[in-house]
Amino acid sequence: MKKALVIIALSILVVSCNKATEVKEVKTAYVDTSVLMKEYTEAKDLEAKYKAQAEEKGRQLQAEITRFKQDAANFQSQAQANGQAWAQQRGAELQKREQQLGYAQQALSQQLQQESGVEMDSLISGVKKFIKDYGKKNGYSYIYGTGDAASILYAEEKYDITKDIIKALNDKYKAEPKTEAPAKEEAKK
Image (cartoon, rainbow, N blue to C red; front, side, top):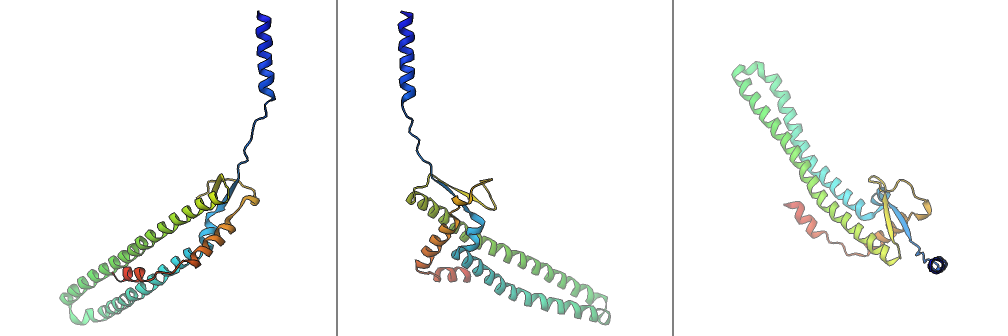
């Protein structure tokens, strides 16, 4: 009886070892996200838009700062001639104005960061969705990201699809109708 069990067990073992295991090929690739964001036309356009806004609004503020510096220089020369009481009053006014200009600079910077952050988040979300759809369409099991926030420590260059993604994203962006009106209305607010 023991012999029969051993023979049956060995038979099962031999039969199970002879079955070929199916190995599904896993198609993977990676995208260099820092290169993607530098070469993606929509990202460049977004960066240029906020750079232009910062320069425009910065010029207005810079004009006020220049006027303040002139007033401060005039104050220095007039302080002795007009007396201590005048100098104290005018000095307090200039100090308050300097503080207001500092607050205005800070507010402008925060406003631009917030506005650009919202649009950049939307852009990144769209890129992620695009890459997901691209991966599904092209049969990838995984698409990894490298770059500033690297999730891969090494990958062979043959798996780099960054240029393919950039080309596809830029083609899609060029094909989309441009809607500038909402952005301009938002900038006026």
